[in-house]
Amino acid sequence: MKSHTIAETVILPACQEIVRIMFGEDAVSDLNKIPFSDNIISRRIQDMSGDIECNIKSKILKHKLFALQVDESTDITGKSQLLVFVRFINDETIVEDVLYCKELPETRKGQDVFDVLNSYLEYCGLNWKNCVGICTDGAPAMTGCLKGFVPTAQKQNSNVSFIEKH
Image 1 (spheres, rainbow, N blue to C red):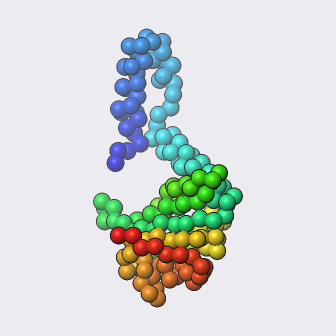
Image 2: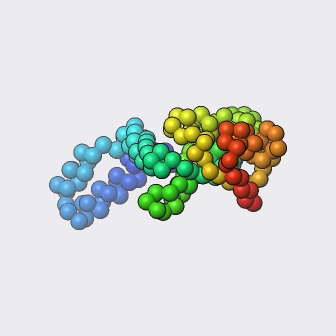
Image 3: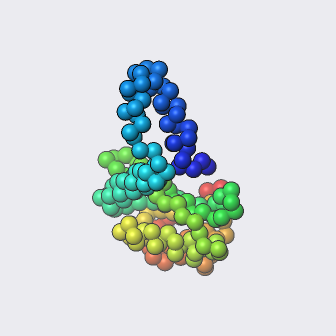
């Protein structure tokens, strides 16, 4: 929960002291040339996140089939977050990773969950026809018989299996 400026106010001074003790003042001046502004830190975080997302998407697209674990949770500010984990086979190994985290709109209905996730899957080029399973916590918004997330997803792929975990 710290801002990106922690690099300038905490990390840089600590690194300067370490470098000063180990290598001397000349090395500290070299260290001071490294940019630590909040914009640079934020951009590096976004770049790393984008790279991770790209790698996961390409692996899923390569092997086609995937399963989703979907959960709606409330963060410390009271906002509803959609968390989606993905499982797929990569080089004969089952891989599980975070696929997506997004704030949900004001309502938390199954259709809202489906719309948010469906939009992301379309953005990634992933098709519901390749989804072999969905796991949820069994909340009514997820499993409701007509308007829950799972029945809505099953309209896209009637062969997708569903597991409810408590």
